[in-house]
Image 1 (cartoon, one colour):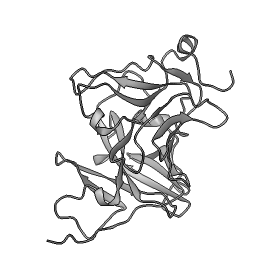
Image 2: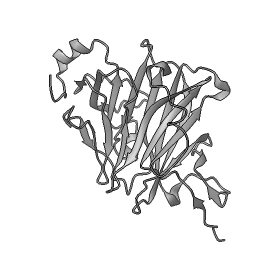
Image 3: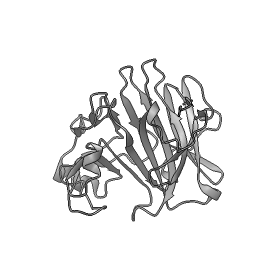
Length: 274
C-alpha cells in the first residue's frame, strides 16, 4: 500500500494578525511571527489593559484532569503588554524590548521535536481589543496576512479560545483518507475525532519545516472581569503534561491583574523602569 503525498499550503508572511469577527465588527487579538533562526513569537499589542500578572507556573500532579493554578506563586507584575518567545532549543519566555526584564522563563521542548498543542489564548470582552481596519487589516501578502476567525451564527460568545498547534509536515492530523492538497484553511481531526477549523501558517524563511495550526472556538465565561486576556504555553514535554500524576510546568499570564498596584508591592515587577 502506498501513501499519496499531500501538498500542504500555509500562509507564509512576515507577520500574521489573528482577528475575530463578532456580528458586524472585527477585532485584532494577537500577532504571530517567526525569527530567522526558526523561533516562534506571539505578541499582544491590541489589548487595552496593560497591567498583568505573569508566572512560570506548575500544575500539581493530583490525579485530576483539571486543576487551579495560582499565578501569584512565583508570579510578577508587568505594566506593559509582553511577547511570548519559543526558541528552537526549547527556551521559552515572556519579554518586551526596552520595557520588561526577561525573568519569566523556563525550558520547554525544542521545536524540532515538538508536536501538538503549543499555546492557547483566551479572551473575554472583544471590545477591549483594537477594532480591525477594513483596508489595512485584510487579505494576505508576503509582508502581512490577516486571519479572520468567525463566531458561529455571529452570536456574541461569552468568551473565545484560540489554540496553536505545532506540526512537522508529515505529522499533520489529516485523518484516514487525506486529500492531495490541504491549507491554508484547514480542518484538523483530533485523536478523539473532534473537528477543529482554522488556518495553517508557517515561517516565511527557507528553513521552515513545520506549520502552526491556529484554531478558534467559543467557550464559557472566564470570570467576573468584563475584559480578560489569558495566555498559556511553554509546556513541559507532552508525556509529562498528559500524566495527571506528575507536576507539570508552563508559562502563563492574565491581563488585567486584579488589584495590580497591591500585587506589584507584594510580588514585585519585571518592569525595566518604575
